[in-house]
Image 1 (cartoon, rainbow over the protein chains, first blue to last red):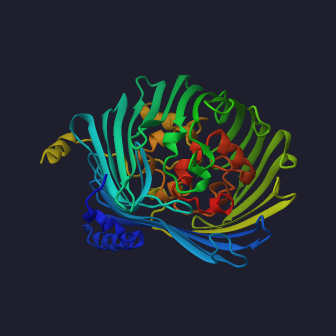
Image 2 (cartoon, chains in turn cyan, blue):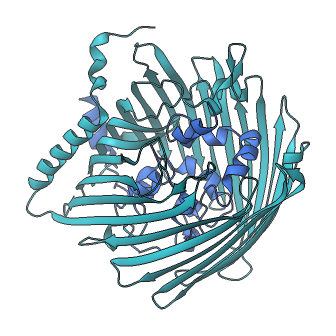
Image 3 (cartoon, rainbow over the protein chains, first blue to last red):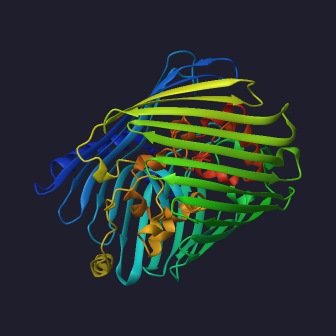
Length: 443
Length: 132
């Protein structure tokens, strides 16, 4: 199917769209009503990493992660904001990635208007849209609102933000989701998206149904089905239910189905391309997998959680596998956490027979945070020459005040690629803001 | 005009833009919420697997999380895996802990669909080092 060529406005580079949005946002914020309260949140994370690559290159990259938000909140509860985040890297030794000594990326940059009523939200710029079948970063426009009689609707249009190491992706996408909610009981949604490549040919066309049902306080059901109209097949079904008969006990179960032919039809890396008669990919197009899982969480005393979980993988082509285990966690918010987990993978190949352990702990002593993490995978037989793979991590950080924190960590690994691998990281975090806590700045 | 009328008739209150109480660590939302928001209990074993369902109510996530929180994992281009960036956050469900270079070969066979949301069409330039 061909569409009218005049829609090729999306050929405008994403960075220009983002820059335009930022300029517009600055104008909007500058013109915000005088009764609005403006707050600024910003954080800089400067990260220095030390390590060695598989091909014996010395890697000493320095990263700067910068994010900030300017929020102009009106007294009626509405708000206009500008949100920008990105990173830059410079290498002090060999090239870290993409064969470049320096690199940078804008992760997001959008202006946003949130209405006081009807959950009205208008975003313009680079953003991450999650509406039913869409989990898509795009340079474009997103609008959602509640409507009468429990209905709600969202729509988005723009240029997908993609990387294309092996295969080309789409250039233009639009879609939406319509929901009906009865606040105390359910939200049901239907969604669709359609995208086109630079030849205006259809690249993706997906429709879906999703639900979040909570008929009783103790019962919660979530799920989604997605249909691929290009391949004419169901991509996935994923549903989960939980039941909490007591405050201290929660039981969960889940089911999923994935058809590889329909799910992997549009990817840009050869690591995830289908193996078809004309294409030698890693993913068997004949494969379909069904998973059945379950979990039990029990909190015998406050702050202590004991959990057990199980998942069965059932394939049309490959042999089945089971993954099961348990975890114990003791946690005092912002003060102490410790946990232990053990899981077993049981499959029909050597790689799918292993035991996985993890022990971790963290402790806050005045301004000092300490953390220790040990992860071990023990295979039943040697994989790539080794039977046991482990990583030990030690981390420490010191908080000078609410705005300035310095941290460092070292990890030591023994794995199939390295007999002894040591990596280090130093991180300087600086928060510059006027109302940090009030804007969710702690996360 | 119909849309305007429907909008005017809705008259629902928007989800709080900022969570009224500061939340520290992994919250168990059921401690305060006896309604549907209790389902967002971050300590539940399956919350990490289920967060994709709740993400369609993004305004609820945004009450506590900034946009950068999503971007740490669902990134366009990212060179530091989340579990390396936040090694001190041992309690969090961060993907790819430990020696993931070895483990990804196993996870990629068991459930390759789990790779697609983050690496199918973005944040996959590193794959080409081996997958040519």
